[in-house]
Image (cartoon, rainbow, N blue to C red; front, side, top):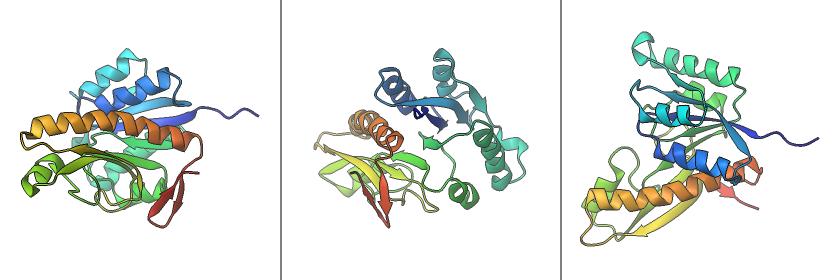
Length: 204
């Protein structure tokens, strides 16, 4: 029996440039998958407009109507389960997931982060990299665990840091790498080519 396209959900809080990179890769036939839903915690997120343009359902889940982080994540879980989502992609989703959600979809949640993990987890990674004086920065796709940007690394891409770099110029170059490696990681997942052993991810 022919394998069905991978069912993907993308969680995003902002403009959704990585969402667009994933959409483009699917439409080019590079990823055998389908984005079933885009979920955001911001009702003005431009990602919703991107989803609409490509006939993808976009859902705003309002944090203010949920009594707790747990309630919020359960609302998201209900959507994911109704859509029978197989892979969750965090693309600038500015909320920390509860352990309950992470464990419910263990090994099926990816994130993209603008640093070479384990360096500079959390917010303002590009700013931290420049302040630290690194000569090489970059982007990382990793599986999500209960920590902050601490899960097993899938793919990384490095960029040279120039003496003239600003946060804006460095962020722009890193973002270009994000747009390359995030679709690659999803493609590998769709092809069942990611094997996690402890902290290491092997690609046969």
